[in-house]
Every structure is written in C-alpha cells, then in structure tokens.
Length: 421
Image: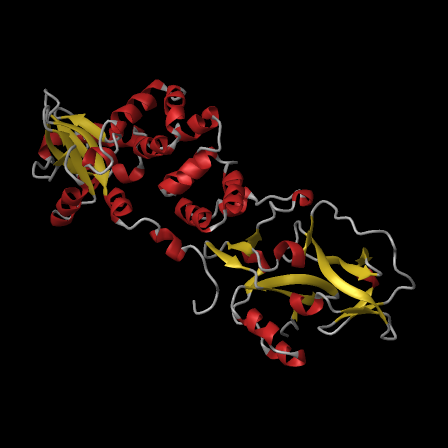
C-alpha cells in the first residue's frame, strides 16, 4: 500500500490545537534524530506558544495533517526548546538547502521534504528537488495538496549538508562519499558553495589518497581556493600524494610567496619531478606530460617488461605502453601491454617492439598533441627531449581532454533540479 505523504511546508506554521480543536499555538518546525535509521524519525516539534518556542515530544501528538497538528497530552512543557546533539530542524536546517544525491553524484535542492507515518511512527521518507513544491505554494488551500511529488528522492539516497549547524555535531560520513568516483566528488565540490565544498573535502580527508584524487579532478580555481586555506605542511602532505603533473598544476595555484616553502616540504624525488615540470609552459606537451612511465632496455625480456609494469607506481592509464630504449637511452620503439601478454615471457623484448609510434617534443603546443593523438588513434603519446632523443614523459588521452574542454564545463552537469531529468 502506498504511503500517504505529508509535505513539510504544509505542516510548518500550521495551527497547533488541543483535542477539541482549540488553538494553542503554531508549529514552527519538526525535529528529527539523525543516526542509524535509513529514514530518520520525527522526535518532536518546535511550537510557538505565547511568543516562546517550546519543545513538544512526538508521543504527545495524536495527528499531523496539512491543516493542523493535534496535541493529546494534558499540558505543554513550558521549558524553552534547546537543540540536542544529533538533532536537525527540518525547515530551518534542510528545507530549500542543498543535499547530495549519492546515487547520481549530483547536488539537489530540497525544495520539499516529505513525511509519512510508517508503522505508527512519523519519519522522513524523501525530498522533492523539483519545481512542483514552488507551484504548490502558489495554489491556495487544499488544492495545493493535489500537486504530488514528481521527483521524490528517497532519504536513503541523499546526504544533507549540516556544517552550518554546529550544535548538531554531525558531519558527512566518509563511507558514503567513498562510493562515488573522485571526479563525481570534484563535481559536487565545484557545484557547491565554499562552505559546502569544505564539508565534502573534510569528509574525504579521512582517506588521504581519495583526497588527493579529488584534488586532481578539481579545476584550478577550486584547487587554489582550498589549498590556499591550508598550512604549508597540510598543502605539502596533500601534494605529495598526487601524480607529479597534477602536483605541479596545484603548486602553480599556491600563493607565489608560499610555493618555495611548500616545494621544500616534498620528498626529494617528488620535488625534483615537480620542479622539472614547472620549467615548461603549461600549454605545451612538457607542461601537461607525466614523468611517470615504464621504460626498459632493449636487452630485456618480455617477462622483465611485465614485471616492470607490475612493480611500477605510475598511474594505471600510463601503463598501457612500455617504451624500449637503446644503450644511449634513445627510444627505439614501444610495446603495448596486450602484445606483452600474448608473447612468450622468455622472448626478447626486441621481438615484439614496434618502432613507428608517433611522438611529440616538449615544446609542441597542445593543438599539435591533440592532432597527433587523433591522427594515430593513440591513448598514450611519448614526449621526447629533442636534444637527447630521450623519452621524458607521456601524455594520456584524459590529459588532452581535460585541457581542451572549456573551463567550467563540469558545472553544467554537477547540479540537478530534479525536473525534466
């Protein structure tokens, strides 16, 4: 049997009456206890009586309807309402505010909060992020109740922002955000307000690797916004977990007077890589390349090349190709992972090497890089130092896409009104 939903907006400011219908006061808000329950229970109401906001336990309420809330006890406790830990006020704290749709990885606005009585207990069942609640408020009287939710999002699928309620002692659980891809979390941060973004970043900070992955996905503006609010030690700790090319981009967004101090706090290998990348113009192959890739000598076997991939700390997308060099360190070709898997592990790497892979030099601009990858249908492109002939980095297809897409493109997809989707 379908639940009969009650709109929060129809209860707030409704008359608070005695069993005979006599008016006692007016409902100001409903209180929920956030915890383990998938649908948080309504634990009480804030009722204004004689100019005072008082707490009324839900057990003392006999009925809740869009037109009135009926009190069933003998008398009202006249003590002033005070919020307890873990409590949220539905109208004040949540209504018309942002929440995270954890299923879609989008921000939604709780334009309405829907309540229902389940097994005798009032609880929050979901939020309506659509435009219908706005329409409903414009329709007078009982006609408004006929405008039913069209895009109800189950409460189990959302996570509200509660950082603006210090006394609630609640934070976004890391375990919920961890189910999303780092790019989805970055989308949320970019679509959110600064304070909401800080809540998200604080939540993912429970996993330092995830935090670094999220920062890698943020645009430069938001990277600067959040990293400049951190101490040098905190900034260096974050940057140390990022890929060198992403770390170089982030260092560039740090206030100039702090860059050297942050760089000096990195480990020497990471510091050297980042410094080298900072020498290149950001709109060139050298400026977007990653210095982490797999390279083996031409005397290696197929099995040794596979072992080099297995033990490499390079990003997964950088391991699709192994580069092969001669005695002088000059590239003589490449081998794909697929070719290595298909070959005999004891075979010489030279027997499977291909010498016709396209390449670019560090000074090539990004349009040249994109054309080269498109013409040769590549997902990985080596970057060569012309003076030495050495491979000094690689560019992956996602690097090119990130750079060529217009700034702010991600925000077009990061929020969701709920209507028409």
